[in-house]
Length: 201
Image (cartoon, rainbow, N blue to C red; front, side, top):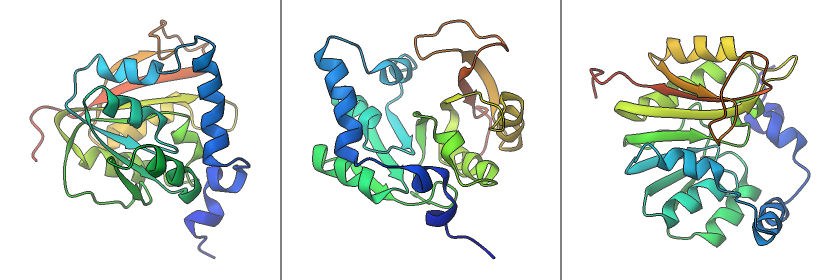
């Protein structure tokens, strides 16, 4: 039996909070003086003009990038999370869609998958998701993804293999969004893969 994304997607099966409650945790941390925008800081370092916030959720990362002047489009499968994104940033282009199949009819300088998006995908859809996101990158564009490395979940080796199948080349890897050095013993990876500059549009 073919399962619909809503029934098989790991995030949709396990989410137990609303978008507003999810965001409230970060708002409390920010109010206490913590920098909760490490992902946006990381992405901004590459100076992209346009960013696809892939698996955007409540739009926390995309909203911050847009606040800093970047052209942002967000895509997510969860209508409850997107409701928060749309309410908090109505001028951003938010799409309720599956990352494996969405067609935005445009390209981006960078795409970011924050918040463990890669390990919340519908099992087996990872290659299709990465390939579809890669199709939305301009030549030289970057795919930036951060996710936990856990037993029984996506390995970093498999992720690199999937990225390679989408003609993406590893540019750099860190163990945190603050760019702490990476080695195989870490349980979190932030990977930057690049679409070759000679790729056809």
